[in-house]
Amino acid sequence: MKNNRVIKNLLIISVFIILFCPKIFGEEAEFVLDEKFFKDFSRIQIIQRDDIFQSMINKIIIGRGVITEISVNERYKKKFRISVESSDSAAFNQKIIFFVFLENKDTVDLLNLNTKFEFKGQLMEYTPLSSKRNEFILDVILMDGSTIIE
Image (cartoon, rainbow, N blue to C red; front, side, top):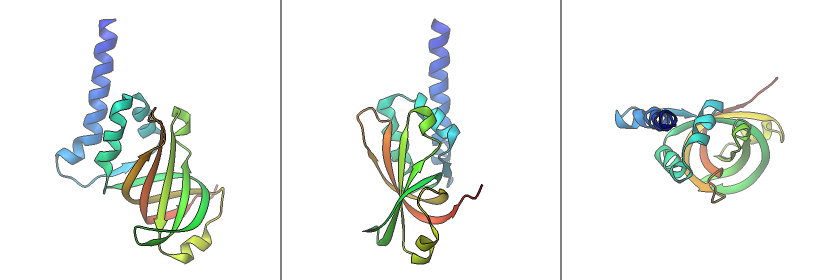
């Protein structure tokens, strides 16, 4: 019983080291919000989940999911917003919706609803949608993105 507690504490500490190590050493890091990230994220105590996203503000993230909405929505001096629901987070009882903001109409014209989209951008803000901290909206300014063809 005591060994399980020690192992659990070591796991939590190692997750924090992995996530915060680039910040400690002053390196610019890209955070990949993939299956591994959400697996580790789901193991973190609920009260500490906001801290993870807070540490990523103004950093580069890489995410992917399914486009659920494309709209004109001016924010962050960008004209368009793409809503992308993460496909990796659902397996771990998380719901992450990326609001991806961009300026280029030509890019918007190439996108279709219900297609897979992978992107890279700057995380601007996060908004928790539940007190359980298992649903979030992440605002991202698009740097690069593409649809995934299978």
